[in-house]
Length: 278
Ligand SMILES: C[S@@+](CC[C@H](N)C(=O)[O-])C[C@H]1O[C@@H](n2cnc3c(N)ncnc32)[C@H](O)[C@@H]1O
Image 1 (cartoon, rainbow, N blue to C red):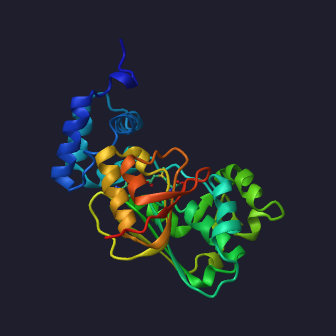
Image 2 (cartoon, rainbow, N blue to C red):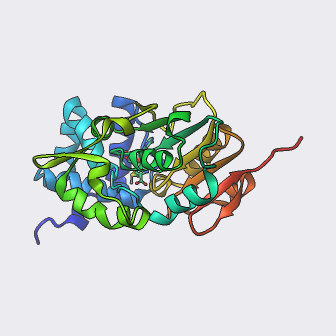
């Protein structure tokens, strides 16, 4: 029988590889959800035509450059412009006060390649709030962050983004927001305003700032319960009073989170920070 994906690596090998990565690079994936981690490892092995976990083991531990790039296969960077359009419609219609004078701070925790961040920028501009808002966007993956900073996407991807874009902006054109050249579309510079991208590991790094809105969408699905609790505590501490937390459609809020946040809108997975007494 050939080596098919299910046989490529077993649970013990996944765990010991993660312990070795933690020792070698100080990156702790031990509390990531095992199934998706295993899927990521299989993806990586197939991409590099590796047949045994030993081969992967020695490459990962000996070759830092290989490991830096491998992180993207281990983690899932999948994202989209205007992902779940109802979230952005709710933000525009209910949350963001049109043309308000007050300033606000927004954190995209796990921003991947930046589509979510630029979506926010377009929505803020539509509400007349872009100049008064400071956006911080973070991720663990350096290569995802580099793509995010460039704001450059293949025209093939752009065709996939058209449907959610038009759901939000039925009368607009992607060319109002992107400059097209050859096979790429780049976010117009006026939308790359007041934003900073930086590396931040939700597992270990502190966040020494407070925000009015935090988006942490489709990141915690890859974490086990213990890690979800740590991240929810961090997000709670990083929100201003009555701040808003937006999680992904497939994220499940653990009981611990229900003690920290009240549901604001079930459909769009928005939560308000609870006031803590005592
Ligand atoms: C599926 S993407 C979600 C992107 C975007 N938020 C969205 O919903 O479209 C998950 C992102 O979480 C990032 N991530 C995974 N573990 C992380 C960690 N410990 N700290 C920060 N980011 C992490 C991955 O690199 C990836 O870019």
